[in-house]
Length: 252
View 1: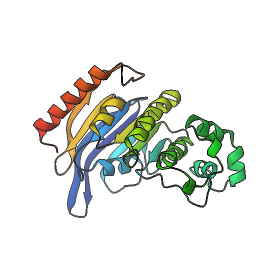
View 2: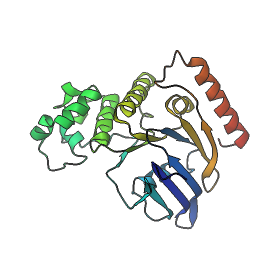
View 3: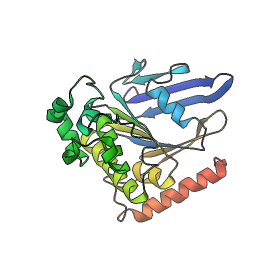
View 4: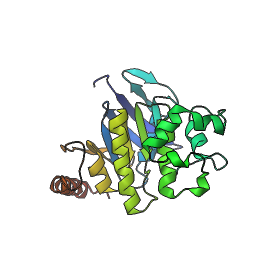
C-alpha cells in the first residue's frame, strides 16, 4: 500500500458484543473522490467516524501520508447529514467556528478566509443571516464552507445531500466537484444514491455483510470535469454495471 494520501485499516470494530466492521483496507489518493454505498446498518457511517477520530475504540489504524492519525485531525474535515449550524450565530460566524470559536461575529464577517469561502459557495450576501433564515440547500452550503475552513486535505461527507430536493441536490453535487477541483482535497462520501455515487466518484466501494466489509470496488473511468449531458451514455453504463454487481452480491 502506498504511503501517499489517506490509509485506513480496520481489523474489527464492535459495539458491545456486536461486531459491525471487519477486515477493511482502504486508501484514498490525493484528490480522489470515493463513494461508499451499502445497506443501512452495514457500518458506512461508523467507518467515517473512525476516520474523523470520533470513534477510537477499534482494532486498526488511520494514517495520512504514512503518519498515524490519532483522534481528531485538522487535515480531515467532516460534514454531517444535517448542517448542524449554531442557531445563535450568523452564517459568517458559523463558518469560522470550525477553528476560531472565540472569534466575534463582526470579526468573522471581516475574515478574508470566511469571505473567500462564502463567495465560493455562493453565499457572500448571506454573511449576516441566521440559520433560521436559510433554506436547506443554503444551510448545507454553509456546512461545506465550514468544513473547508481549516483547509483539510480530506473531506468526509455522510449523506450530505439526502435531505434536500432533487434540483438542489444536483446543484450541491456540482458545487462539491468544483470545490474539490479548486482546493485539491480528497473526498470520501457515504450515499444511498447510486446515481450520485456514479456521477461524483473516481471509485465506488460497496460495504456489505454482517459485520460490514468491502464486498466490491468499481473504478469509474470517466473524464473530469464531469458533464451530465456530455457523459450521459458513460454514466448510464457505469450505473448499470454497478447495479449488476450489487444484484449479484445481494447487497440490498
